[in-house]
Amino acid sequence: MSEKDYLRDLHKLQYVPLVRSLICNFEERLPLLDFRLLRVLKADDKELYNDNNRQYEYSVEVVFRLVNLRFIAIRSDALKNSGFPSSVNLLWNLQTLIVNGNRGVVAPFEIWNMTQLKHVHFNVLQLPDPPIGGKDDEFVFGNLQTLTNIRKFKCGEEVVKRIPNINKLQISYFEEPQGFLSYCLDNLGQLHKLESLRFSLYPGNKRSRNDMVQNFILPNSLKKLTLMGTKLKWEDMKTKICLLPNLQVLKLLKYSFVGTEWETVEGQFCNLRYLLIRSCRDLEWWTTDSNHFPRLEHLHLEDLDKLKEIPSCIGEISTLQSIQLIWCSKSAVSSAKKILKEQEDFGNVGFRVQVFHGIV
Image 1 (cartoon, rainbow, N blue to C red):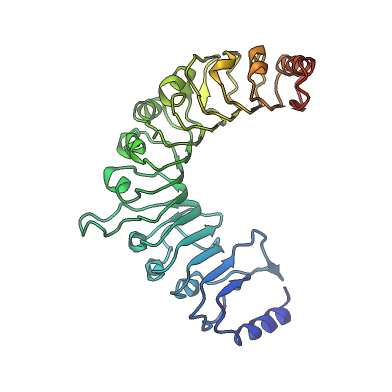
Image 2 (cartoon, one colour):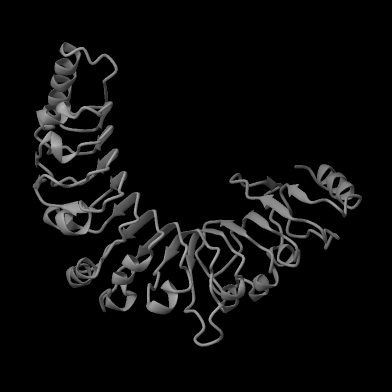
C-alpha cells in the first residue's frame, strides 16, 4: 500500500465513528480514532505488508482501548514476553481473543478478570497462575470454550475449577529437567466437558517423560485427541487412550508412540472413526482384528517406512471407507492394494485407497 493510498483510507475512517465491525490492516502510527461502538475488529492477515522496506503494523495499545469490543483477531509480531498490555482486562465485553504472530506471549495477571472470554487463541501463550482467594465466582472463565497453543499449562486444582466448561485445549511442554509433576497433568481428567485435546511434548529427558506418562489422565468426554512427541509405549495405549468411550478422532503425530509392535485387543476404540499415524517410525508390526475398530471409517498412515503391512482384517471393517498412505514402505502399500482388490471383489465399489510417494 502506498503512502497516498494509506492516508486516503485513513481519512475515510474518520467519518465512520459509529462503525460496529472493522476488517483491515493498521499501521503502527494509527491515530486514536473514535470507534467507541466497535464490536468486531479483524486485522490478522498473515501477509507482511512492506512499503519501501517499512513493515506496516498497528498499535496493540490502541486496539486494547476499544473497550466495547466483543471479537478481536489481530496479528502482531511486536508483542514481547514482557510487553503484553495489562490493559487487556479493560476489554470487559471481549468474548474472542485471537493474536497471531511469530513471538511467544506471556499473558498479564489481569487476564483472569476477563470472565466473558469464550475463545482464546495465540501462536504461543503462557498463562500466569490464577489469583488465590476472592469470591466463588471471581476469576472464573465460566464461558471459556477454546484455549489453544498454551505453553507450560499448569493444570493444578486452582486452574481446573476456573475453566469448568473448556471444550477445546491445545497445550505444549518443553524440556523440563525437574520433571512434569509440577504441571499436575492428572487433573486433565477433571475437565469433564473437554472434547478436543492436542498435547505436544518437545525434547526432554527420560525421567521427565516418565513423570508425564505416569500422571497423564484423560477425561472420558474426549472426542478428538492429538499427540506429538510424547514417546509413549504402544502398551500405554491400553491404559491411556483406547478405552475412552467417546473418542472419534485419534491423531498420533511424530514420536507420539515408540516401539516396533502395536497389538490391540477387543473392546477398544468402540467409537473411533478416524485414525492417523504419522512418523511413529519404529513401528513394524500392527496386530489387530476387525472388531477392535468396529466403527473406523478412515485410516491415514504417513511416514512409516518400517511398517511391514496393514493387517488384512482392516478391510473387513464394515464401516471403513478409505485408506491413505503417504511415504510408507512398499510392503505396506502392497498390503493396502490387496485390501482394495478384496473389497472390489466383494462389490464394495465405494472403498478407496490412496497412495502418495510410496517407498519402493
